[in-house]
Length: 552
Image 1 (cartoon, rainbow, N blue to C red):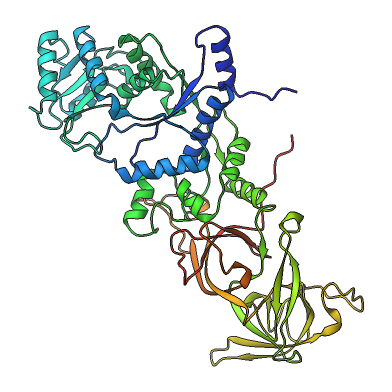
Image 2 (image 1 turned 180 degrees about the vertical axis):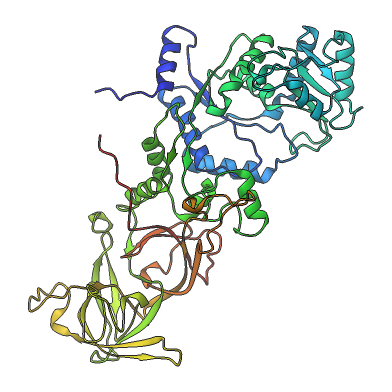
């Protein structure tokens, strides 16, 4: 049975069948003015996937036409992220700035054809002359300058003779067009800024809507895949390609953006969070930049699964963050070794267990993947358990440890609470139990049953670690934005547990290693703050899921 195709693939099939194109070539064109986020992952995987499916080519291209916001840091971060996702551009790495000379020549051609002119209106006047959605615009008083005057003025712009904002080059199209984008759009502006690649060679820079179709045409892109907000820009895209007289004319196709609930994706908002020190960088695990997701423990496979579940459509919609969590759980459940980790430790002493005795239990690394084998876990008289696995006065149906109750220590013995100690503030500091040696795990003991099983680590054979727990950085139920336009931040988005104890099998864990902490969730070794002397784990996702995969 043939796989069903999305609407973009159907368009490509038709173009190949009717001879409009004899091959497929796509591109991913990020602006290097920030880090990529989960929405970009959809575009990357779509463009790369189409090139792969049709045995075509994939171009990686930076649209670096705005030197005021661009940095080499962003270029390198974007390259890392795209490579990590598995999109291989081989030797097909390009920059819009590679084509600044060609773009200038196209602008000169348009002037000579009477299709572009230099305008002296201020930005405010240009907006005023543009009109509205219901009223046509009006012509600039500079619209009818001669070709010779426009050529001279444009060259003077290039030679740095005018200050920023004093002159622009505009396409001459139709100020009465119902599409505002066609009302003599600006295609070049003066900007005395040092470019991250071309330095001070240029003091005029092309606008995105002018540069992008030229880049696509020069690179022989067949299908220029972009998001829906560029649908109204398509007539201008086609106009530039046609008036520049390119023989091979790329086709722009728009698809719906990926909107995710309870996250921050806008670069402006993320940059402010970074600049204000609210997060510790573009890769803070509370964000959904690709770098942040990687640092938090997400895998390329989980993001690919997520994008496939979301699908490709022409209609904007929001996706529940729980779907992304579902995908990483599905990917890691058969990959990540399981370990016992006590995040908020409280000491448990087995009074009748010999003080100098240590025994080892053979524990399965992953019950869903037998090939991962087993490990030896040390057991001793003094253990740690999680604080929320003990209560002095438990409510009904609380089956964990409390005075007089018996539970199973996972993979070990039954223990019964006989006493506990508290400090001067009333906090429980120590729990005392007795164990039944007949109840050793695997012994076949059937004498009685217990309703609760809790995990533990040996005090002397466990490793100290810092564990970071996360919640959504914003809460859309209360409104993502405050009345003043600022983000409605969750003050509990990050909790740091500095004294976690984890079984010693993780002693040699490396950055980005992933584990399932039993009864807790999936965690990843932090790649930024982990050192030889300090292990730091980021919570990737809890074990509890509210997402149900839709039935076909």
